[in-house]
Amino acid sequence: MGVQDTRAAPTSRESALALLRWYVEMGADEAIGVAAPNRLLPAKPAPVQQPVPPPAPAQIAVRRAPATPVVPPGAFAESLAEAAQSARRLAAGAETIDGLAALVAGFEDCPLKRTATKTVFIDGNPAAPIMFIGEAPGADEDRIGRPFVGRAGQLLDRMLAAIGLDRSTVQITNVIYWRPPGNRKPTTAEIAACLPFVLRHIALAKPQVLVLCGGTAASALLPVSDGITRLRGRWFELAIPGLDQPVPTLPMFHPAFLLRTPERKREAWRDLLALKARLASLS
Ligand code: URA
Image 1: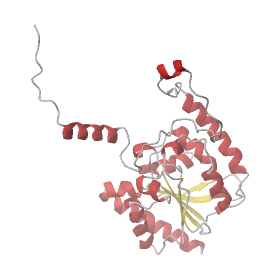
Image 2: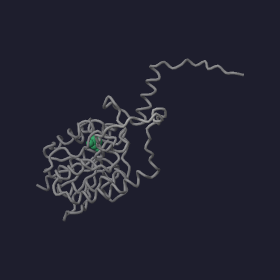
Image 3: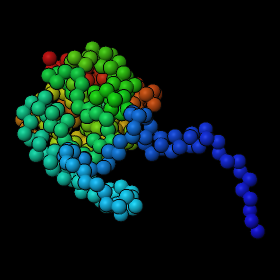
Image 4: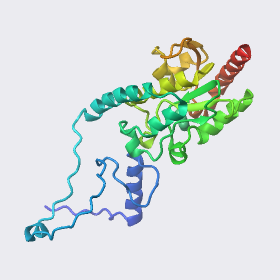
């Protein structure tokens, strides 16, 4: 017996909305360009100008679909381990923060770069003795190319202002330089691929104080496994390769977390006061 499908066919508006929802769930939550580039394809070699021979008749008859690149399981993890190695080699050669920024901008081995629009390396004053390190660029940072320029960045600015600081007296970076698709959390391997640059940045900046914004930055840099709720407000002495002295380091809640959980601002305020007192003791 046949069964008739009595459901109304989706209107084009419904199907367009369903498609949009699917895009957002897959992490494509922004329209950046008119044509969507496939950044997963291997880079094209520069075109060589050569006369094009007329196609053979059989080639006209059989048009094959373009080959889709196949990524074998584990290939990204392997290439990320190689990326970490090449980052270590490159970072070791950087003698200035500008030089390091250029190396990061030219680094092609982190797959996140293929889906990001911009490399996001630093904001603030690269000579400032206070360094803030966050997690990874979001949509606004990816568009503008500077860390902490979106809503979380605006809260960070207000937090800095509350203790007499601003972007001329601090420098700001992240443990990841390219926006993870859909703002997902960066993986451990992605963090490991950027970490040599982050450590070199700290060594070149020689900050008097380091502030780690959020659990991702804290777990990337501190040799402890506690979550940010237990770590925040505690001072650590962080040994950095290339520096003679450990750097006093304070983990704090991430401003994006504080936007979602304003009741935790009271603890963040205590941490800011601890930072202010530490800075006063240094001057
Ligand atoms: N969150 C971060 O951790 N870093 C940014 O640059 C922006 C938001």
